Amino acid sequence: MTNEEALKWLDKHIIDNLDVKLIASKAIKKQIPKKPTADYHCSTCEADIIESVNYCWNCGQAIDRDGK
Image (cartoon, rainbow, N blue to C red; front, side, top):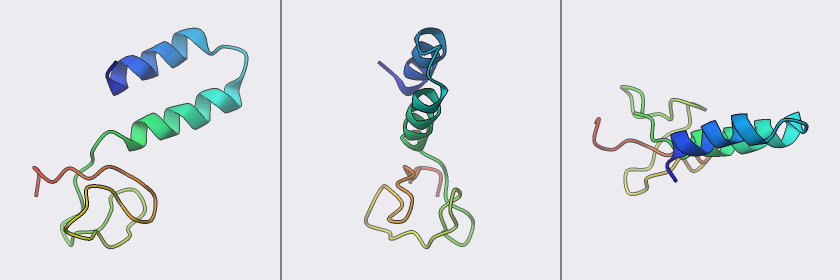
């Protein structure tokens, strides 16, 4: 299941518990890689990105290395 499919599944099946839906949605969205800023900071939390890792050490956001 892709991240996009998981988000659609959440929207369709988790109706009565908004807290669960929001937490799960945030976790899935952090798995979708985002490009770092021009000065190599996380685009989600602005923390410095360490070159040898694919996730932000501070917030867990996946980093898109192909875009840099």
